[in-house]
Image (tube, rainbow, N blue to C red; front, top):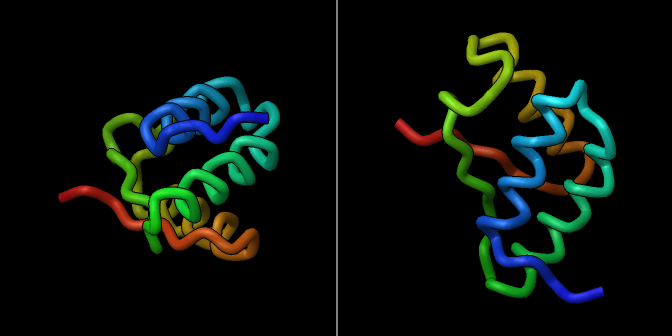
Amino acid sequence: MATLSLEEAKEAIYESLKNDNLDIDIHILALKDAMEAYGVTEANFDPQKLSQNNRSGRKMMQSYFKKRGVKVIFES
């Protein structure tokens, strides 16, 4: 399987979140692979694209991704 670009991996996660977290773990693994390929240590997401753009939703996302080895930050 070819490594996705960071943007492709993030877009797949946004779509998964919109679709009730469908295949989210697969998309997290793809993001993790893309991050390693590009030498990035944290994933930067746009909170406006999240289905739950509130503090609770962002913290839940950060926690879930952290358990899978991905540090999530949000754009200001």
